[in-house]
Image (cartoon, rainbow, N blue to C red; front, top):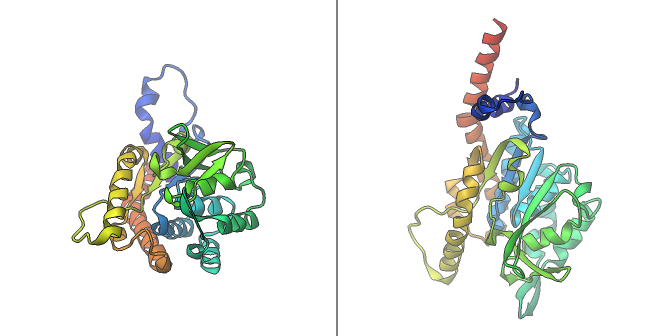
Amino acid sequence: MGWFNWFSKEKNKSEDAASKEVAAPAENRYDHNIGIALSGGSARGFAHIGVLKALDENGMSPDIVSGTSMGSLIGVLYAAGYSPDQILEIVKKDKIYNLVSLRIGQNGFFELDAVKKILKDKIEKDDFSALKKPFYLSVANITDGKNEVKGEKGPLIDFVLASCSVPVIILPQVIDGVTYIDGGLFDNLPARSIKDKCQTLIGVHVNYNGPMKEIEGMKDIAQRAFSLGVEQNVVESRKLCDFMIEPEEMKEFTFFDFDRIDDLVEVGYKATLKLIKEELAPVLKKDKIEEQETQA
């Protein structure tokens, strides 16, 4: 029995005992073992690449993914079958931070046509169902004032772009007459969309909201206000995750530090290794002891 099965079994003991019907084995309750929810965070979202790299290297690759904003961009490439190293290469080669085109208008300053071109080139078919791993994303429907989750099947790329469309800065995406913007508005850590589909859910939140020593200038104030506002919808999502990765080092980075990609990847990588050592390893140890006692 793997540690993910053990974790799921422990998590569901109480409901198993309460059920009068014969329950299915814990390992058969979910379609997927490990799920990962990747938050938005603009440039800070590059840390997701390091998180995925550490998990892959330790045999803990997520097999279902959800993402918002930059988390949706990194997440869709991972779900399409690209390794973290390949994603890093794509981002560096195409300089994602230079892929927004200036287009001053009443709805925003930049558009994502160049990003759209890359996604069309890298993803085999513009449909959720064509991805190698199940992938879900959150987008904000500002026409009707509600969050929407997209996944399983249907048009893919336009909704990834919509989830990345930071209000005012990036032009919104109009799809079938509905205006969509950055999913972080309502759901910056999209845990709920895959919570019931995996045994163990890892949440990755890259926006530091703890105390800040200095806040200077309009840009700092705007970033801080946006982060704290979005934090309100992260509170409940955090509770849905079995494990959380929230590097405190993210306070050293801004939304616009696209040129510090290597540093951001390293922060995500080290934070995940720490999680594996301090939280996941003890579970593995207990699992091993349980197996030995069973065999005795």
